[in-house]
Image (cartoon, rainbow, N blue to C red; front, side):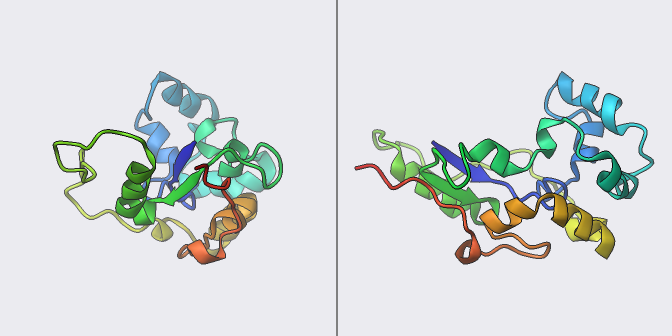
Length: 168
């Protein structure tokens, strides 16, 4: 099993858009809109949502679950063979291709880019005050440790997550 991890910090930061905005804009499927209406619509804005997290906890929405929930079978046990980072997307893509038995491709093996934003988006850190970063950091603390993320960056070297040994 191979997974490419997309940074969380903007509440699954999905690095670019807070999940509250993602869901408000319709999300990826009909259930996303329903989740927004049921769990998030009453918040005035993203900061209102984050400041309520210590009291209300995370809503039961898949986009907001910590990544370790999906990746760990038991503490420090996983089925993953490789774990790539969005910040290194091109390299992760090439690594994944190198691990998949397949005939040579006639076309380029470069990663395709679709639906590219034409305007510069604000950095996800701009959405947070210091207190908001602390709240989100405490909720996703285990993910931060496992995957080597801090609010401002990531470090593959500091990640504690281990994949299975490579099968030959």
